[in-house]
Each structure stands twice: as C-alpha cells, then as structure tokens.
Length: 68
Image (cartoon, rainbow, N blue to C red; front, side, top):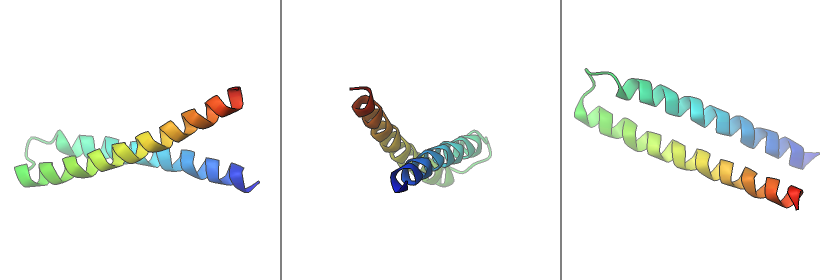
C-alpha cells in the first residue's frame, strides 16, 4: 500500500514540476524581464526540468520491470 502512495506522490510531484516549468517559461517570454531575472528563472527552470526528468526515468524503469 505504501508503494502505491509513493508512486502517486511522485506522479503528482512530476505534474507539479511541469506546471512550475510552464509558469517559468511564461515569465521568461515577458519582453520586459531583466537579464538578471531571466537568468535566475532559467537556472530554476533547468533544475525543475532535471528533477522532472529523473521522476520520469524512474517511472520508465518501473514500467519496464513490470512489463518483463
């Protein structure tokens, strides 16, 4: 039961990270943003995408294990 809860939390976390990345992208598309602020948002976005990618890779691995 706990494994299913953890998997559900990871999927929700993945979706949350994607939404955060979308919001950052919207902010980055603002032509009035300063270079400094743009760089900070970019760095934060890269970190979020890397975390989301890790969650996705773990899900793929679990899928492959189940499939085998």
